[in-house]
Image (cartoon, rainbow, N blue to C red; front, side, top):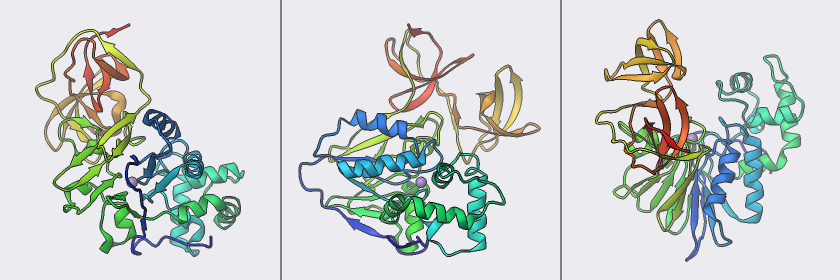
Length: 368
Ligand SMILES: [Mn+2]
C-alpha cells in the first residue's frame, strides 16, 4: 500500500460491515499494548467460530508491548472475523507517510526520546529497537523512517487501512465519538463523549474515555449502557489506571466480562460501605499535604476541600505542601463474609481491592 498519511482534519473514513443474524459481537477497546490483558480477556470470552470481534481503537501505546499487540491482532484477523477502528494512539503510519516537516520531526523526536512522556516505548520505538537503531536527540530520523518503512510493510498497511468509524446493520463503532463534521481526529479523540453526545439512532459503542472518570465519588470501571443516548462506553482503564481492567462487551446480549491481573481472595468478615467517600482522579488531582504519617499522607483536595489519607507513593509531583496524586479513593467497599475480591495491593492500612469492577478498601482479614 502506498503512503497514506492521516490528516487530522480529513473526514473520517467509514467501513460498512454486514454481521448477519445470530452472531455474537465482542467489542473491546483501549488495549494500549497490554497483550497479556488481551490474551486473558479473549480466553475469558470463550470465543466460538461465529463470533465477530470489533476492536474499538487504541490497540497501541502507553502499555508494555505495542508491537506484540499489533502483531497479535493482525494474526487474529487472519484466523477470525476481526474489525478494528483507529484510535488516537494508532495512526503510526504517519511516521513514515507524512511529508518531511521540521515541526513534525521535533514531535516524533520528543516522543521517541521522551518515551511518550514517560509512559514507555511505543510502537515506533519498539520497531527501531528491533532493528538495532539507537534512539537519541541527534539520531537520523530520515534513516529511522526508512528502516521502519522497509521492515514493517504489513504492519504499516494494517494501520493505513483502519477506518475511523465502522457501521453494521445495528451498531456503530467509533473510538472517541461521532463528530464527522469536525474530522477524523475529533472522532478518535472525543474526551468524555457521554457528557457531550446527542442521542444516536443506532446503538454506538465507544472507548477512549476511561469509565472511572465518569464516576462521581466511586471508581467504577464497568461498561456504561446509556439507553437515552443509545451509547455504550467500554474503556475499563487498562494500562492508564493502576487497577484498570480490559472489558469485553457482548452484543446483542448487552452483557460483558473483564480481565485484570490481580489475584482473587475471599474476605473473612463483612464490612459496611463508607458513608462518605471521594475519588481523586486524573485532571482534578491537586492536593495540599496536611500531614505525613509513615507510608500515608493526609491530603486536602484543593477543589473540593475533601480530606483523604493517601499512600505516600501515590504522590506524582510535589512542591512544598502542594502536590498532585495518582488516582485514589477512600471508598470502603460493602462486603459480606465470603465475598470474592481482587487484591490490588496490601498496605499498612488495609487492602486496596476491587469487586465487580469497583475499586475500594477492605479493612479485615482474607480467608487463607
Ligand atoms: Mn484513546
